Length: 207
Image (cartoon, rainbow, N blue to C red; front, side):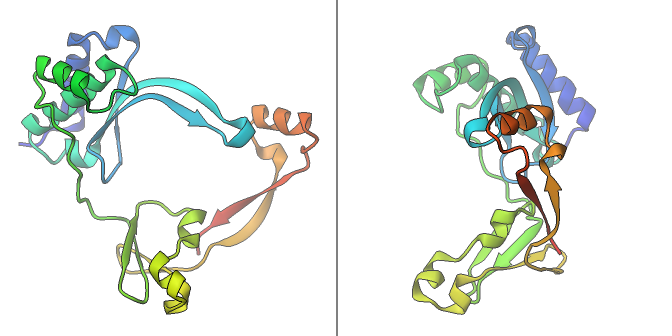
């Protein structure tokens, strides 16, 4: 029988405490990922290019679509799977050390499966090829079907996007230009130091 959000969170925090993660600053949360069952995050990148920095995270996350739908046994195994990643450290993948630790803590020691949750946005090329995305991005609208692009057919591989409900999404439109003074303080300082404080940045909106 599926669990509630509170039950999943309590189970995860209990298992993390049992294996010493809570005492070392590890946290837990549910996310909305539709393809990945769980993830162990050691750090996250912030910014791009010269502004790119790495921030420690120490967090185990489970997809809410998995946690609230699948059985207690499956969810428990996913949590233990991610705990094993946290215990062996970053960069170990699903290698021998991870498998040993995973078995020791009661996990099946198998790679996590992939969910087949419905995507929010569906793209189709004129040839019939389909693409899935769960959020609207500028890059999504630049995406081309490579095979048709190379052959110069089907409008050079142009992909037409719809919502899961069937509503067409038009090409992105730049509705306004935002001055750099709306950027976070850190980035404003970095831009000013390089004489780029008057740089303008686009905000892209879907139709």
